[in-house]
Length: 313
Image (cartoon, rainbow, N blue to C red; front, top):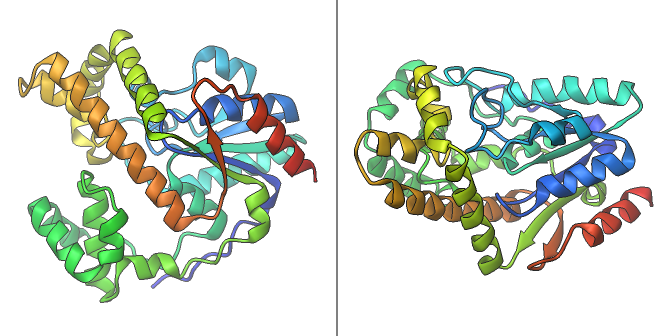
C-alpha cells in the first residue's frame, strides 16, 4: 500500500472557497481574487474537460479575462482524470502563482480534490484492472448492497448515482479487507489554522433550490443539448467519468429517446438538487472549513469583507 503523502505546505498560502453547486462560490472567489491579487484554481472534477462548458458552469471568457483561471480545459472528454492528477497539476499551478507574487484561490465543489491537495492522497491502493472490470459489470444495486454491509459510513455519504465512485469504494474494500472510509481516515488531520483560509458556503434549501432551477433553465436555454451532441462526436460516451456529469448524462438519454426535453430539464434539476445535498454532506463529514451562510438576495460584499479580515489577521 502506498505511503500517505505529506500535507501540502503551500496550502497555508492559499485561500479555499468551496460549497455546493449554485451557492455563489464562483462569484465570491472572483471578487476575492481581484481584491487580493489572486489567481483562481478550479477544484471541479468536470471543468477539467474541454467542451463541457454549459453543463459545468465554467467561468465565462469575460471572467477569465478579469482573473487568470487554472485547471480548466486541461484534457479531452475521452481522457481519464482523478484526484492524483488534480493534486499534481494544482501543485504546479500554486508554485507558479506564488512565484508571481500572487495568491492562489481555490474554488470548487469537488471536496475530495481539495482534501487531497491539503492533506495528501491517502493510502488507498491503486486500481486493479481485472477486479475493476468485474465490478463495472456488476449491477449498481448489488454493489450498493455490498457497500452498505461492509462500510455503512461510506454508504451514508457516497454519491449513489455515480457508479464510478461506488466501484472504487468496493475495489478498495476487496483489495485491503478494510472499509473505504478507513482509508480516508488515515489522511492527516486538518490543520485548524487552515480554517481561516478555507470557507464553505451554504444557503437555505429553498434558496439554493431556486438558484439551481434557474441555473439549469439557463443552461438549456443557451444550448446544452447542442453542446452534448458535439461532445458525443468527440468521445464523451467512451469516458465513464465525464459522462457522469449531471446534465450531460440526462441529455444523452434524451437524445436516445428515453424521455422528452421538458422531462429531461426537470430531471436535471432534481439530480442537481440531490447532488448539492450530497456535496454539503461531504463537506460536513470530511472537512473543517469556516462556514458562511448566505441569505436570499444577499450579495457577496459581506462574506468578502469577512474573508479579507480573516486572512489579513
